[in-house]
Image (cartoon, one colour):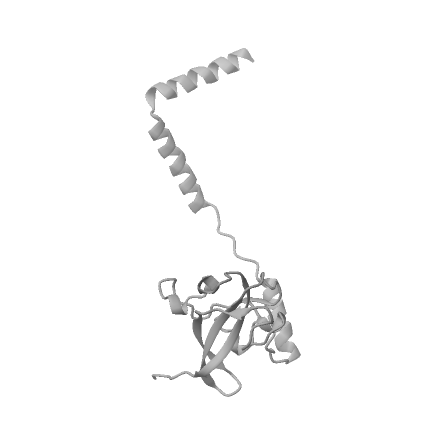
Length: 177
């Protein structure tokens, strides 16, 4: 086995004398980046979600205000206040509405109209942990603050602890078609 150790030592020393650390890192980087293109990109397994959606449609039941699919939650990101002791338009006891909010325009399939929805976080208690929805329909990038929902909107309140999110219908949205 000594001959094997000597062989690898000689080869390693030869490479070390002829190549720099930078070139070795470049070669390793090329190998890693190149292998990323060779390996297949595996799809996400969404069969369970599809089966759940199909089961809901087959049951013929319309979503209720405690389901993420309910029309007014089209830009929801957080726990539904309906499941946390409040309602869609009022915070649970012991919490207060955030002083800042984000907005969304949601389509009500029952009457065919679009509504402006104000999403306010309820602040002051730890996260509710029930009925989490993250729909993000037509969400704008983070530089459009009033239309972006991935922010702790309790930052303007005395207590910055997030509890749940309510979705209050503000009124009909104007359409410019």
